Image 1 (spheres, one colour):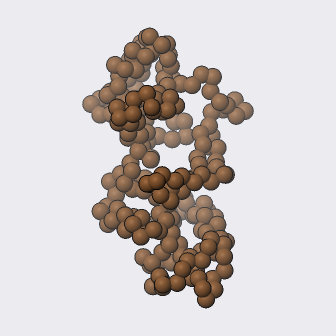
Image 2: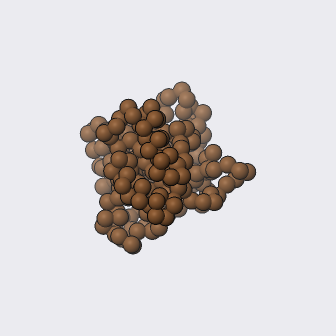
Length: 231
């Protein structure tokens, strides 16, 4: 077990009599398709002075699994205990909008209702179908806005459509197989198209950035300088 009476060493520092080494636990790294990427992630932690552990006595928990809003109570309890004790957890099962576009759209709808005009305009053009269908059609007719339609959990640009008017929107909803399969569920997110879009070599992309939130109140957010551009 960790001797909590001895302070942790700073990241990258060598353990001495006055500070104990930092321990990191990895979970969900056994999948074959994740092996190569997982090995590199592990090496990054180890190069910065962390020691791998398989016990619950860790300073950092790095979880490499798909986001699961229905995670077990045991998993959620483990993460909450880690947060309360000041440890770092690199995954959050308790915030489904982090990995689900429709859940994120519903989360933004709650923010719009609470913040009104104080919500940043960049976040105000994300809607949910069928919940916001009337709002979307009104914006298309009055403002001539175009929308990008996506599945809740699709990725890599698959099953994405751009609609220019109300007729094309209705045709898409009536003829697309995966939409008709769940007609009463909120299975489509509609995002206002930014025109012209920012392109790299003629292709759209999205950014993956890494942040650390050491404190919620007062709120402190640290942004890592290097990120990923995914095509």
